[in-house]
Amino acid sequence: MAKKRGTSLEEHEKRKLNKQNLGKLGGIFRFVLPYKFNFILGMLFLAFSSLTLLTFPFVAGKLIDAASGEEWLVNGINNIAYILLGILLIQSIFSFFRVWLFAKVSERSMRDIRIALYSKLVQLPMTFFDKRRTGELISRITADVSMLQDTFSTTLAELFRQIITLIAGVIFLMFTTPKLTLFMLGTFPVLVIIAMVFGKFIRKLSKQTQDELAAANVIVEETLQSIMTVKSFAGEDYESNRYRSGLNKVVNVALKAAGFRGAFISFIIFALFGGIVAVMWYGASLVASGDMSVGDLVSFVLYTTFIGGSIAGLGDIYGQIQKAIGSSERVLEILEEVPEESTADFQMVPVEGDIIFEHVAFAYPTRPEAQVLKDINFSIRAGEKVALAGHSGAGKSTIVQLLLKFYPVENGVLSVDGKPVSQWNLKQLRSNIGIVPQEVLLFGGSIKENIAYARPEASEEEIIEAAKKANAWQFISQFPEGLDTKVGERGIKLSGGQRQRVAIARAILKDPAILILDEATSSLDAESESLVQEALDELMKNRTTIIIAHRLATIRKVDRIYVLKEGEIVEEGTHEQLAIQEDGFYANLVRLQFAE
Image (tube, rainbow, N blue to C red; front, side, top):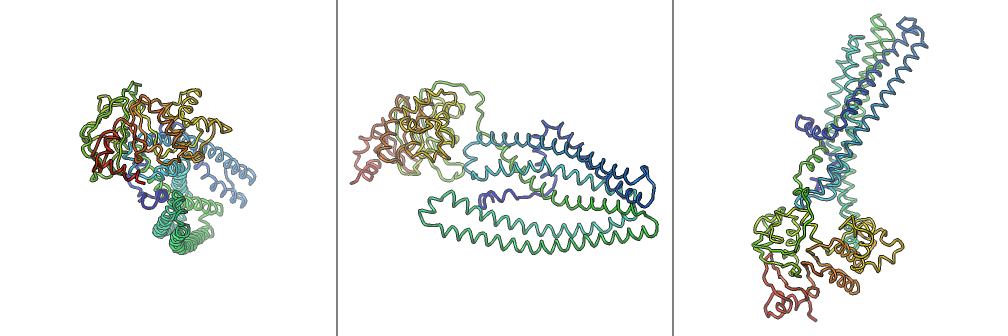
């Protein structure tokens, strides 16, 4: 559903309050356990606060009786008024500590949840990310955790407060004014049942409104993510009309819901105040007959107000807990995911760079029926430069992803230095592989941070040296802030050639045994390509290098070329050997690319 309608809908999903779903919310409580002392203390202050406030209506009634001349434990209107102020002061102190303690628990436990979520996310395998949208995952760590934070900081506290107020208030009224209390309990449940039925229908319409709004928000998300495509096809009017159509649906459903909500509110006002009038009429009759004092009637009305407020508040709290269960379910779903294998036993080991593929076949887990690689066999000796050529979709990038252990090799054997990649520690393997991708996406920090990402402990001198070898220092040194220049989101403040050279500097600093160049110069102008190619030549020295290329001019100097077609190696050899084969697949590619 999230993939179809966007992540906004997830924030409004509710779950039924049954034992299974409450257990999911309970699964989040393990993050509260380290702060259980503050939580229990907060619950005690909550109970004290609620019970203290419940004495207010009783004493207020005695104030009215004192004005009528009746005696109580304390005589005089002023003294009773002081007691009322004292009750409010004590209750306020209890409330302050309750709010403060619950805030300490919720802020720290939600911090722990976010850390656990993020740590788990970055450790999950590529198969997990293949099945989910980025926006959905961001929603988990932001909107869902915020919902849980509201639940632990306010909703749970309000739930217990309303329950204490409801139960203690009814018990107190049964002792002080039993006749009037039984009359009230006979009228209120009917109103509550009608309100719940009506409210359930309105909630369905509200959910439908949220669904339509989520669908409209997907249009905005897609448009902004592909704004260059929209503008290049002059699709502004089309997208505006598409969004307008989506919002019109939202308005139609929202107005329908508003009509029912208006009728519901009108009914509640009439029925609620009608019930209050009935109770007050009966109470006035009891006062007139001498069965009840005026002060007791005032106390009863105040208690009834408290109880009515608790019943109304429980409806909202019920909805909030339903949402929290949905959020906890989505958070736990990620926390229970199986991560990539542990990197805990990582040790820096020297790698020669020998690579062997033996009868490797592969299909992506999301598309098991489509075999991307079919019986791949080739070997690369340490220090050799090998190119993978072929049309898009032939399997070139998949070979690299298997080498990086993004996906498990299920058929055949892929080994590095004679050891199957399945037996390599993830961090050991990847720390010895450097990659310069076709589309370089830099982090939004400084140039220095982006280069040092390969080796965070590197000195500034080492970073500058790497930048010089990558032909990047010539433009970095011209910036007023030098290495501290911010590159902007995804490196947008740098040109394509500059981003490529920063990526090459990062690879040089990493000093990997195995280097992967994925179409590294495919989208550059002639001058930038010349600078980047010079930097790449420096980078490739004494390293096992795999070059993925559509542009065959970039791979003429490699030791060997493997030509892939529909997941199979159809030819292998040097550029000169393959180019002269009259009916060869590679020779045909050469003729197509170099035709006048």
